Length: 231
Image (cartoon, rainbow, N blue to C red; front, side, top):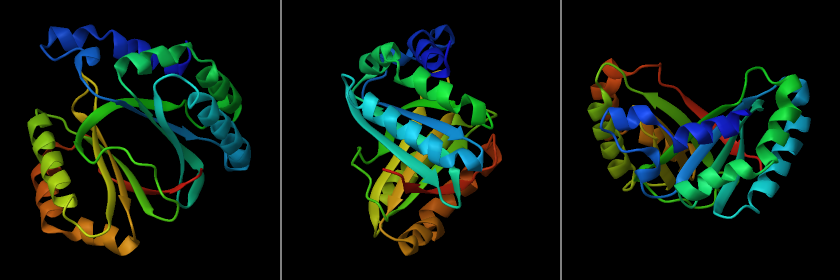
């Protein structure tokens, strides 16, 4: 089974979530946000970009597709993120019937450094989707809480979203929570009008306070990666 179909199957039928008393993924309302990380040999960057763009075009023709955006990491253009938004869980699950995913993964398999990493989320806090603007500062980060730190993670994410809404230069600020039972994993998508605004946000007291509270619960080191729009 290709990675996309496997992840969709997991999202549709997650018994542990029910066993733990958490809602099943299909019971969580709202759009589905999917981020796929692909890293290939630098020599294969142009080929992979063409394949990813073909995937985007095919995916946007599917029922329920809201957006499919392609990003390349600044300084490492052979690292890609495909950021997708689907109308709801049903549209996302129906996505498994499309050949676009298997075709993309087959093309990049000979040159990939690792298998594609696919994460499925819902909007926890922040702004709703709007199309990214080339030239803005785009940041995608992963947050992972362990040791019973999920409530602290959720509180930190809420406070950061509330603070970002008032900051100069904030274009888009989405805190995406991974579907149950992985709700201790989160993905941040930030878009700022300038690097100065992005730096000011990181130095702001609400962000400093949030990460001070969260530090002892981080399951993986926190890092921010900057991207550019490849559309």
